[in-house]
Length: 201
Image 1 (tube, rainbow, N blue to C red):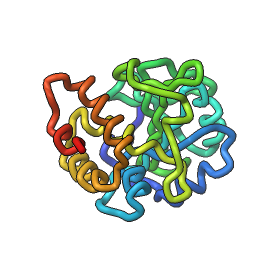
Image 2 (cartoon, rainbow, N blue to C red; image 1 turned 90 degrees about the horizontal axis):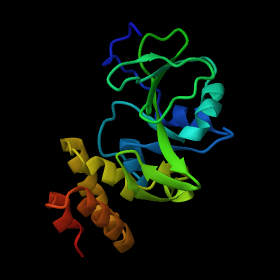
Image 3 (tube, rainbow, N blue to C red; image 1 turned 60 degrees about the vertical axis):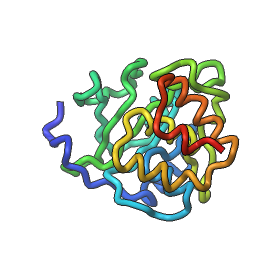
């Protein structure tokens, strides 16, 4: 358990995050609102934290890389407990919060992506996925989750900031990105979803 309140966040900056993982011997990429802005090429809103994704099989390499950080696993989801040294977190535990030694606030969120046999898949639906290396790309020279995948995650329970992110990205999405996103939104919401009409071209 941790004594730091869940809402006590003073995240490191995107630039600090990139510098922290620069040269890491494993795949990492930015997700969340910052991935949206890297795709857009400019800022559109404030952010609560920086989301960094690594593949589950690389989690211990990431743990080793983050020397000097106190790391906590969301196990079970909605709680936090210390992530033990060399402890391999199983499927179902996918969020890790952290802060540097001496800090009394949360500074970074690490998320675990799922993959098997060179294929990534969504933890909420294993039928959604593709080649492992297609989960991420580079926007503005920063490794980032592919924008259509990020928007798919955002469509599930869209908050006002998710609606704003979708509206900002929509004019820049390619036909292929729109088609990919619409296909999997229909899979998740067979009775319809407000974004589908906007994605139709």
